[in-house]
Structures are given as structure tokens and as C-alpha cells.
Image (tube, rainbow, N blue to C red; front, side, top):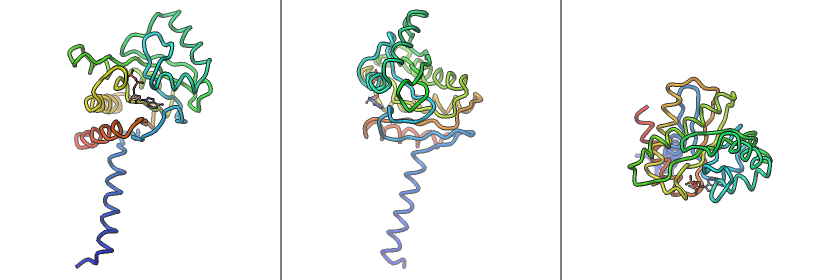
Length: 206
Ligand code: ADP
């Protein structure tokens, strides 16, 4: 019989391992990690902004990034919109990170949720994959994503988490990349838990 103290230590170790496993997944040479936190504190090469087409900043993560990054980001965004018009849903552009620890901000526009009838999943997939391609084009090795579209844009988190992680996994399986670290920075514990569940499901498939 295993003494009580030994068996509970064993159990603790097992659950710790499980926690580690469900927070991370490595595909080819790139690690996907989930954390709960504020994306403006990340020191990855780039952080991704869930922007709106005007690139003028706004609420949620967009407002937080512009506040922390300062005027240089907004100036570059204004120039981009002047040259090429508003950023379409599912597209991505890169600017300086301004005062942020991250060197760059990649701005992408996720879809507004309309009940799932207007190509929301394809557009959300595109927002993630276009951001990853842009990071690859610039030779970046690390990038952080927020949970795109699940705030003001109303995409249900459970579904968005599955789409987001599958988009990243498919990219890593099929496209060569300089990226070695992809971090999802989830703001609240509910969002974080949904991403963990989705990552666990994905781990069983890859
Ligand atoms: P969208 O308009 O694409 O829905 P939001 O910014 O409204 O974008 O919300 C997207 C997600 O970003 C939500 O889960 C929200 O809680 C989260 N969020 C807000 N501020 C931050 C932050 N500083 N860091 C990381 N995530 C954040």
C-alpha cells in the first residue's frame, strides 16, 4: 500500500505535468504557449493588435496597445490608412512598437460576429494566418496574440479559441517560418480556460 503522503505527492506531480502539457504545444520547431495576462507587457518581437479598419485605436486591447505604445504607432497607422485605405477584415499590417517592449505591432482586423453566417471562421483564420505570414516575412522569432474578435466584436470565445488554435496549427504544419514562439495572452480566466480546452483538443489531433 502506498502511504498517504507519498500518493498525494505523486498526484500533485501528475497534475502539475498535465497543467504544463495543456498550456503548451510544439508543432515542428515552434512552441505555442497560453498565458493569462496583459499583452502590452510582452517582450516578444511583435504583439498583435485586434484593431478596427480605421487603425485609429479604440477600446479593449487596441486602446491598451496605443496607450502603452504611444504616438509613433498612431502616426504610422494614419500613414498606412492614408496610403492604402481602411484595413479590410482578415488582413494585417505592421508598425513600430513605439514605447512597447515589443519591436513591432501587427495590426489585424477580426470579423464582427453575425451568428456564424458571414464567413466569420474563415475571416478569423485569415487574421491569424496573415499576421503569422507578416511576422515570417520580417524574420521574427516570437509573437504574442490576444483573443481576436471575442471582445467588442462578439465572437463566442469557445468557438473563437478552436478557430484561433487550428489556424496557427495549420500554418505551422504547412508553411516554413522563422517563428519559434507563439504566445496567446488571454486577458481573463474564462478566456484562458476556453483556450486551454481548445489546445487540449488540438493536442489530441496533431
Ligand atoms: P475585438 O474588437 O477584436 O473583439 P477587444 O479588444 O474588444 O477586440 O477584445 C479582444 C480580447 O482582448 C478580449 O478577450 C479582451 O478581454 C482582450 N483584452 C483587452 N485588453 C487586453 C490586454 N491589455 N491584453 C490582452 N488582451 C486584452
